[in-house]
Length: 88
Image (tube, rainbow, N blue to C red; front, side):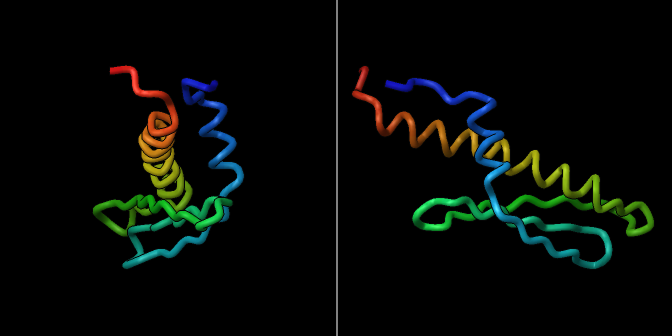
């Protein structure tokens, strides 16, 4: 029985997600990742800067992706732990 989540697991989830994004106020990008699950679970990430003159959408997308990746570690860990036999 699987008892850990690997970086490859998380990468595969990110790679399998559909994304939509929106830019707000010329300085923030919000990216929605929808995962191919029965319920179409969605996780959001956002990247923003203080001054719109410094806004770089590619950097914003990477920041959003990192946030979503971090959240997936939590969610997948919780899901896995729920499926394992009680050890305490």
